[in-house]
Amino acid sequence: MQIKITAFPRTIVRFLIMGVIFFTIVGVGIQIGKYVFNFQDEWLNLLFNVDLEMNLPTWYSALMIAFCAILCKIIATGKKQQGDRYTKDWQLLSLIFWFLAIDEIVSIHEIFIIPEVSQALHLPKFLYSAWVIPGTIFVVWFVRRYSKFIYHFPPKSRLHFILAACIYVGGALVMEMVGSYIAQSLTQQNIIYALSTSVEECLEMSGVVMLIYALIYYLGQWVHQLDLQIEILESVSKPEQHRI
View 1 (cartoon, helix red, strand yellow):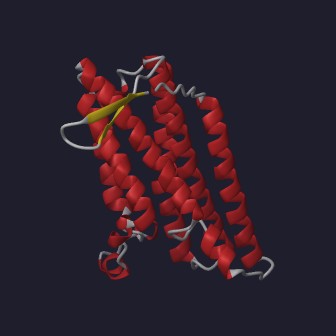
View 2 (cartoon, one colour):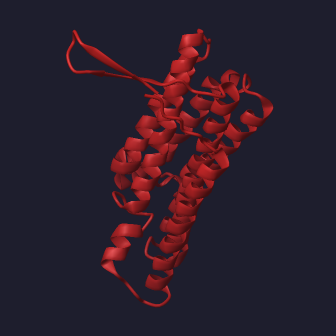
């Protein structure tokens, strides 16, 4: 059986961006309603507040990151078949994105947010969310680890990946620091902090959308047609193979 799927990067990105815009507008609307008009709806807040976990924006972001992991794995598989020197880089990228997708849901990074430790170390206000310290170290390691890798891309793809990384890190790290500063200078219960978290999540999701576009575009430039095989094994001795 052969199934042909045609992917248009701009069309995919257009739909994903619509989701980002939707969740951002709804999230901002909820915060304005809460702090300006004193209107609060617990269910709307639980479902759409981008500063909370395990809700619709969180799952939307996590699924997009997981899609990035799958795309990296597909590329890594193809590179391995070609004996490409950067196969392990793609495999590691896939693992990193799987971790980020899981972290988006369960917030593993928040283990590092310990107010007592931040106070004991006399950390500045913008570092009060202490996870940004190991996060910054990871970004530095990542840049050094993938500096040679990124330069083997064609110029256009290289620009796509760098832009995606800058947007994502700008949201995940820079805006997190801004939010920490606002929270410690004022409180978390004000519209300024609420809007800063909306900007943070919007940048993170936008960075992931840009990365999806970069991966699909690169995949399309690398191979115009992807031949994917799926094996369905009913038993060890009788494999049945479907070619897609």
